[in-house]
Length: 333
Image (tube, rainbow, N blue to C red; front, side):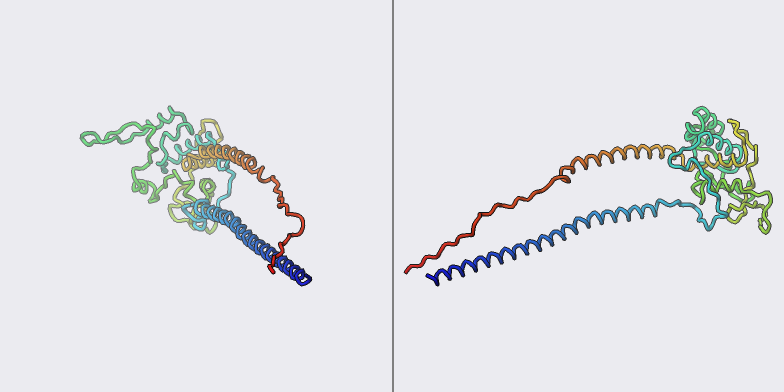
């Protein structure tokens, strides 16, 4: 009997040891597997947003590199004296063109600049509602004659201008323009603000930068005029703006700087006539985007608030109390 009881005790102790070892190994395996799975899932979870963020930043940087810079026809090294930076109101993102200044600038262009320079990309219809009324634009267009379509006999007749026509050039062709200006070709001013480095600052400084006498040591070729802001300092165009050269309709004092400022704003409008509409559309986009962003934040918090604030409680299963009973083996004598 004593030997039988000792054998039973040894068997129960071995079974308990095996159970404990299996439980320990299973717990260690589950812990290692859960930690490995947690590391893998954490890496996958963080890699996707990190990659998306890096891609978005790279795309934005590349877009700004291509389209965010001012592209000018000439580099700063090819320019003359660097122009002064002036606080133009219409260049601010929340400001528009001064339409009274545009009207004065168009008057300066017609009375001073139109004899040599053209704005061939500007139609009469674009002046309506911005610089003049419909009747004024029609009357201005009818002052010039344009070719009609060939008739049945192939002859081309003349007709008065319409709102759909473009402002005429002062010369028939480039050869006639060169012949009238000692070989120099006056450029078209439609996009001049965008075509020169410095934009409005450059053109304003050029128009007001003619000194009374060239400085000592300056060499000016025959037929040219000294202007430090022009590349090479020698320009074929002489000074054209003088005090009280024009008489403004609104009785604004027509000083040299005032006329230069007005015509520069007008030339900025000819290069970018859609600027006011673009800024207005930008404000609408910002307003709609702000409302949609606020709604998205509210929906996100509304949907995720129960998930974010919930508390998870783990209730383990209740085990049977007392030691586990083993059945005694039966032996037949």
